[in-house]
Image (cartoon, rainbow, N blue to C red):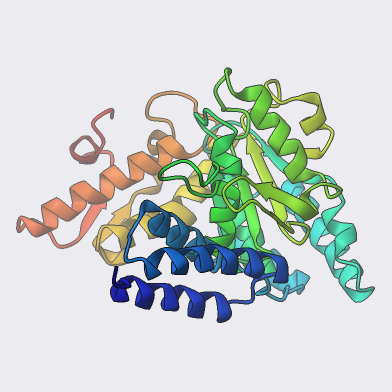
Length: 352
């Protein structure tokens, strides 16, 4: 039987991919053995599912950032400016994050970044819309690190985190390895978002994987079932968020430092609406700042259209609704400049 030349050419491409990637020596040898078996099969002119499975595996292992890492930026003044730009108020939370960065800087100066990673994992705890997730992105910007998010809401299996054996058809790595691949560095910030919202059936197994992820004694050799090779996560900074800690295993709580996210007062929401949300909503709606202005006397009603809300999600939706309605008025040939007042508020605020 004639050799399958097309398959042999594809196998050569797999060889080149392995040789051009900084794989750990043992993993490169393992991948080479898989390709060798494929090559022998191709000599007999056959084509099997094993090629697809092996090619998929090599594609994943060569995309993992085994060596690439980013350098931390440790300018506290710049970090404070970034936190202030993303969040109004919340001074106690900002203070804790700046303390966290200070510790990182001191250990950097001593060449011992591992000591920081061994400290408790910051966990932002608070109601929806209080800014938990945004703080993680602000910290990543302040450090100059890439960030990847793992959503835990509704997660139903530990395999979502750890992957599935490649012996199964259509198997892939878990969220942890995919996060490294997305970040393209081995030391990103990985946001473990809403870790208290996993399904009750899978909670025990998922909490077990979380303990391993957050424990520096174990995460230096994290084993994803699909890669079937230990990955060093010791340089990753994990940040967690939760609505509350009641559903978290004790072993997970022991590795976390909960930081309570306070609710916003109406006065704080007015400032946030005026200085943070409205400018962004105007930009998203394609409006210039002069095309929509809001009378100061109207803001208390914009802030609380349906009663009290601890976060700012309702405020965001309300302001975005106002800017969309303003955009329609302008496009349909109405006034090119809209000033919202008590008199015309009902046109833009249905609950007014």
